[in-house]
Length: 150
Image (cartoon, rainbow, N blue to C red; front, side, top):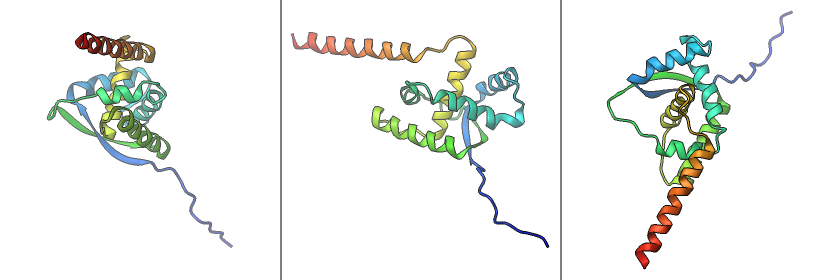
């Protein structure tokens, strides 16, 4: 007699597409190859670097500063795990609360990719450096305000 069981829940993930600048696509392919990922593993590579990026203390600030020139992009499909999708939604809410700016999933993923490519080139700032720079700017603004009062 054959036994049948109920289907088991699986994490199929969330399908989406992200807008990537055309000039960045080749750099992504090179970075994937250097990390031993092939083109069929693009979603996994994006998931891995995004998960790493979201561990940064300054992730919300970097996402808020991300911008892109309209019309210079190409859409690429991506599938993300449900866990990462939930984490992305949490960080996007954090960006709204901390920065007062609404950003979308594409901007978060582009920022993660950009930060990874900068790290590979040795040009990425650490969270401490971005926070220190922010504190210097805030202090300068406060001092300017005081000078205007005098």
